Image 1 (cartoon, rainbow, N blue to C red):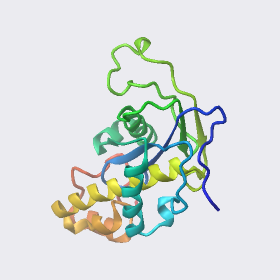
Image 2: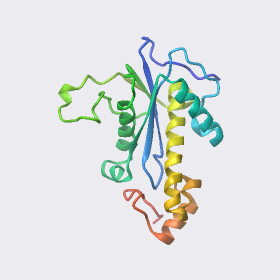
Image 3: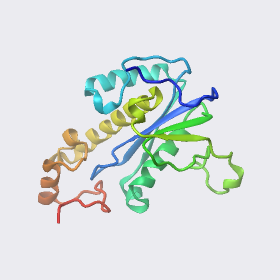
Image 4: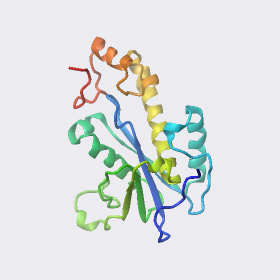
Length: 210
């Protein structure tokens, strides 16, 4: 089934958002925001979890070439521990939205949780009254398998986070992050038990079973 181009019915310029790394024990959480042309069509786009790594990277190049705007936002492990992973995932999306070179008029988000987005809030929070009003948004469960812009965002978030975890793997190869991307696999937890956590581990997460 082909993915849908737009959610809003008012013809507003729409950005799709998704995150990667929410369930990991280590590493930052990444999010992407993508604004596609309203008439965009790409039958190959799909939820990043349904694609091979090679296909994800090929589609990343296509999205970056074709999008009206795209950006990636990052929230560090320390920030995750301070504000919790849900708030960190939403903050990463807000940071991605703030980095878009084209300002959207509507935001669609994968999942069922999101905080209203005020353009510029992550760049200057000194006086929120001076910022524009929050953009209208919609949260869509399994949106990455339903809407092109969210699927595109899922691909960017996943591949950029995988690149980041591969870089960290070179510093800490014993944890196997190039294979598990920081998720709680048996290999990853065995390495934590043997070597202890790194500065990149999320201390607010249960790193080892009780």
